[in-house]
Image (cartoon, rainbow, N blue to C red; front, side):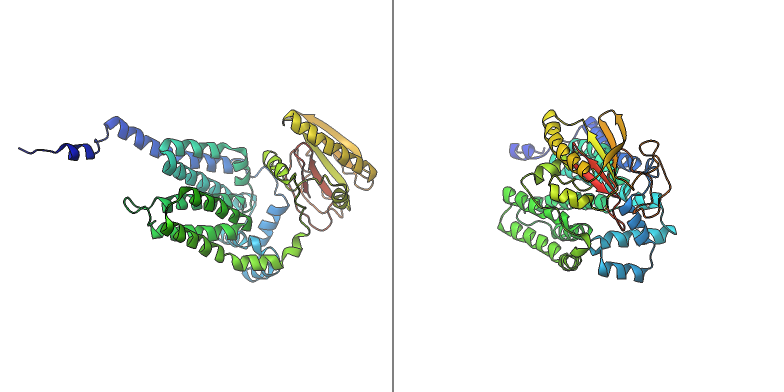
Length: 400
């Protein structure tokens, strides 16, 4: 006869029921649905939008020879070097790049970010939380937008999520050894921080958020020291890029000044995705308008009444400057939630029959793609800037 002490019996976990095991298995399998949804949404119709300026740059750079690519990165755009190198390899593997093949890697990166978020949610709150978080990210318009853009933003998203998951694993450690996180997760965390910086140096701001997490978690002195060491190693690997990028900073011109309204403008920019802000400062706006022939003024009406009133005051001042600069309305179109006006000055009259109509590039144009569609976020400059895209209720603009 075998006896079991009460303490031993209580310490043994009860075997899971068949129904509970089945639910857990279904949840794990369903977790893969989120990245699949993200990838499908990323490639679905990704050839319809014509490549905008920065995507054209990506495709052009990736088509160059390896010596030409290295020569370019030694002079400009070193901060995009890792992405350009990746796209160069994708082009070589596919025998060239077009809009579809250049955008598929971004769709894969967003799918990776979604899978990483499912994993992170499972670590923090269980499989159901991970599945819901992953599906939410997969269907966000911002995620699908960057999944269809041949730039590095989707890769930054993916690496940031994976780095956060590695941090959580490093903080968890092993049972009974909470002050000694596993070395492989620390090494992986350092590597991911380095990749994050090489994809986008601004992404290193995530390290500050991770540092706050460690401080609030209070994992112990030894764990804290090792995590800080991993962060320092990751940042140190990005120092050469920071030095080279700083030497090339003259290639991007002057950055907009930081003011008290910068945080509000930034979050408004997130709500209405676009590139750059249409300056509220008269002097900056005059400088932007120098050499500009056309302005697409897009007024979003879906924001709150307070936001609309604040933006309307800015818009009024901007329109006054446009009038002083010789601009006049040439086309107006209203749709649900948006008003679109094309303003132009003499010498910039395009052949436009409808908003978004295609046309052949005119001599001297700084762009050779179709007229920007409603809500266009295209930006960048090639040669002389000829067009501005202004979104007034979000104060978002792009140069074409």
